[in-house]
Length: 237
Ligand code: B12
Image (cartoon, rainbow, N blue to C red; front, side):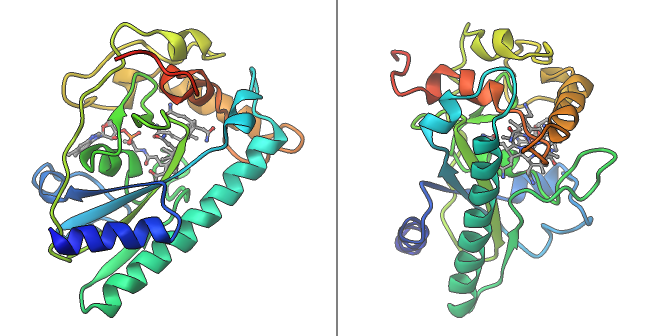
């Protein structure tokens, strides 16, 4: 426990707004895919870190991403990649193995997959629940966070998933400009992306956004902005 607390304190002092530890056993037991295959095999734990997104930038998003959001997105990714490199170096200097997963690198452009799903790790690390938008919704900042992961064999104490508080809320479903969100809550986790999203609509929209002047990345931000859990005045409960 003391080691986990020390690691978390280091993550916070290096700039993490949220930090949690996931047990990798369920991922290995379920044969959860990674790119390349077998990426998780040398490790037993994954550290999930999040940096928060600025409210004034998120609140300015209407139907399309703004150039300020595109800039903020790039800066947050750079912050996360620096942060996870520092965490991995800290762990390695203590004699354990560690490997950082890039914040936003797409490894398979056809199927739109990263090396490891930061959302799956974040959910199992208790950073937040996976909401109807398929985003991780944290109790403190809602989905207004960006995530990254460090895999390790350090003997850390895992955290666990937290309760899903989406309830009957339809804010992200109603806000989605391409009606991609199906308004489904998963009992445990979604079996696949299609269960939560009309995935092609979301993917096409982010591609179209990437072609807009001043954007240049597959972003949107509308469901991120809409979630009441991320707004300064949050829902009761
Ligand atoms: C490729 C990609 C995209 C693609 C595909 C998105 C997708 N849902 O897969 C496109 C371009 C469409 C996209 C869009 C967006 N993206 Co994107 N994207 C990624 C990227 C690089 C990889 C995602 C991936 O591999 N998904 C694979 C699928 C299978 O996994 P999944 O979506 O997590 O869902 C499954 C798992 O979570 C699993 N699961 C959940 N719990 C558990 C537990 C266990 C034990 C197991 C085995 C599995 C499991 O269940 C789900 C269903 O199978 C990640 C970064 C990363 N490396 O993770 C960012 C990422 C997911 N994107 C992000 C964001 C914010 C967005 C957008 C809002 C755009 C924007 N920035 O404005 C939209 C929202 C899309 C949405 N509603 O999901 C953030 C999410 C932050 C958050 N709060 O959750 C991420 C994590 C980037 C980051 N560094 O923060 N994105």
